[in-house]
Image (cartoon, rainbow over the protein chains, first blue to last red):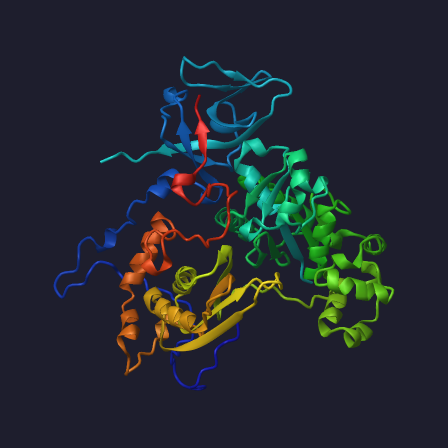
Length: 152
Length: 428
């Protein structure tokens, strides 16, 4: 972008706002200044907690899925929970994953040991799903968290 | 010397559809244009079946049934979100990026201390695949035109390997050989119109265009074509356009799902379009100084009575208030509306945009004008619609039933932009 020409070529530091210049908020100290003593908290100020920082490590590769069914209750994943799924993590043995198997989206624990691959439930009522020759398994992403809103 | 990379997502719309829907694996998928009219994107399987780009959906019903082709309405919310994610990733590979379209971006790679650009391209491709599950091809060259050509070579596996092609790495005779095997119409900016005229001059291949006399082409065609020739020779003439200027006009127009024959229907459509346009206006923190409205019948059906009319009015005071803009747009509509026609399309345009920070108030402002001076209501409106979905809160002028709305009967869920539409996953 060309430098805007100052109408005061040799003048002192005159600031001329550029038409359509981007809006840049000044970092104003949010603690109100009083004429008396300065706030004792001013030097200790932190950013307020944001749940995104807690649950989402990599926003670009993070997607959300809604849980149906009870086969993962042993891993504290319940029907109605929303899963945080990070696609950038390389899935490993023991990860809870979202997987596409035979046209279905599933959430299971990935078992991958001694040449055997399976999707394991976390509920005694459900058998493990062995991935055999000819079966199509796509491990879509790794589940890194979950959340839910409660009715009030 | 500059080094440009063009990163282009393969079958982007169709790939986005496949990404979230496991039932689409290995199935031919097509995405349809507005009103579910024509094929605008095809998966690899659909391309292999010979489904042409742009073919009207109703014309390929037999093939669709025979090959179990799955068709989707354009899910722009999904494609835009996935596109933004791709751009986020690309931005970490170069500070100098030009988002050329929803599925293509140019990256400048020189000065990055990167010796092996093809390896860097492979890394980009791998990152997008790992993080988003989308396939991209990377074309690299000393000019934007050559980078785009390299991308074509990568996609068609004419050169390079595994979806990455660096023309800089080819020996001169290898490059010449490659260019003599590619049709001239493939070159950026040539296309279907110019190609036959060049063919008429004996220019059939990219190599022939590169080696043609630039001055002659400039005289016969344009300075643009001359520039293309120079770019093919490796002389960079097109710079990165990294700064996206705020739009000077905001347009919103649509063909109707069904023809409208009364004024009320048109009024609802125009009010809705104003709402959308005003939302864009506020997002870029501008005010509009003039409003244009147009209506027209179906120009593709010359056998029915034809009418089209547009009118622009300057506003007494620039505004971004939906209520004020709606009042003026409906006044214009009443002036240009003629009964007895079947209307096919309407649109609105906001013009003479100025930054909101420069608002000038009129001294002699009637009520219809001063209403728009308080931005609080509009800020609230945008916040509510941003949170609960577009159109949650709207002016009654937009109507309730909206029978004129676009046909988008085959729309997939907005998997990544609406909480109530996120994909479910079965634990069972």
